[in-house]
Image 1 (tube, rainbow, N blue to C red):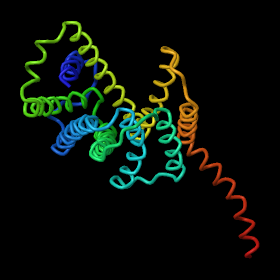
Image 2 (tube, rainbow, N blue to C red):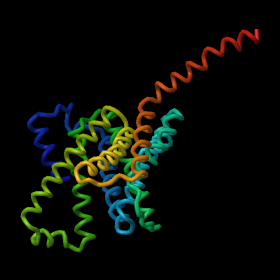
Image 3 (cartoon, rainbow, N blue to C red):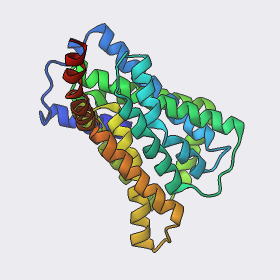
Image 4 (cartoon, rainbow, N blue to C red):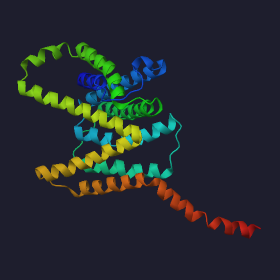
Amino acid sequence: MLTAVIIDYGLIKLRFVKQRGSDCDLSANAKFKIFMLSLTFCASIAFGNIGLNYVQLSFAQMIYTTTPLFTLAISTLVLGKQHHILKYTAMMPICLGASFSIMGEVQFHPKGCFFVCAATMLRGVKSIQQSILLQEEKINSVFLLYLMAIPSFCILFIAALALENWTVLEAPIKYDSRLWVFILLSCLGSVLYNLASFCVLTLTSAVTLHILGNLNVVGNLLLSQFLFGSELSALSCAGVVLTLSGIVLYQNTDYIAEYLDSRKTPSQPEKDSKTE
């Protein structure tokens, strides 16, 4: 988050980013939404990390693959958006396929499952909040990340000092200098990832963003097989096929719906003529 503040501030000051007005021009409602977005972001990270204390990463990733379904349901319940039944149908192969791709020995723990599910729900809420700020408030992606990163950094830093017993200040002294290089690269990658996510949300929707996240699971599986020679099980192959077929179905729901409606339409005049 600190890296995002520094990089985005530099981009804004060098005028690489065109943003109408400044943070002072934002309404009080927009500033409140940004602060709530920061809270949701921090809570999703915290719950996810707490959950990993109790369950394996593979189990957590299986739960995370249901994020598109959570996001679709939240947008319907909270925002009142109506989605075609085919989109809900497409969620089944997308979520199941990604789960099959990473399914292995899973360690179930009720407390860990609760925290991971809470993190998954908060990820869906966060994406919807971002979508509202980017599409309705018309805030630039870089500018929104800059505004969100400032309170997020403060919240996480204070929480680390309060909950980690000040070890956060003692540990860096013992680290190798090479580790700081990898930490810096990780920070830069995180900033690029967040900016890319914001751009995707600006152009598409929160559900599409998480569907692409499930596609990323499949991509990692295939890449590990290509680079490290990992063997793909039959269940993993089935998961890849399911995920890809679900994504194709989701992206073409409008065309499929139009085709189904067109097949129903010609039969209606015949029924009308019989009644006459």
